[in-house]
Length: 118
Image (cartoon, rainbow, N blue to C red):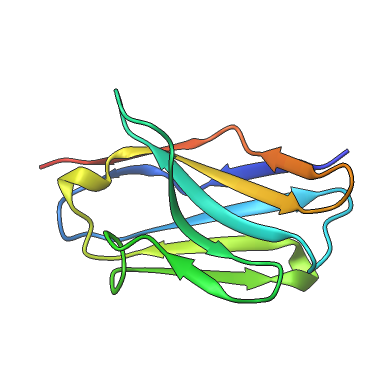
């Protein structure tokens, strides 16, 4: 069984930075797509940034140039460096690991709160 544990959330002022970490326990190979999603109050969960199984990185347009996703396969950990944070980045951030196998394997973390406030 795979578990994903996020850390690094918190309260930050606009323009500030945070670094989120997601550590995976269990069997996670580099074939898994791993990424970050977020859900703001009253809104649907949305993609923030993801490493696809082919190693391609995708970002939501709203975070391009401000957020950077990175991955350490040796540590089974994915990171999200968030710079120039805005009020609208406030949300619960979730880590996800997905493998398009039969059946598919889809794991989510418990989420970590990021609040951007002055």
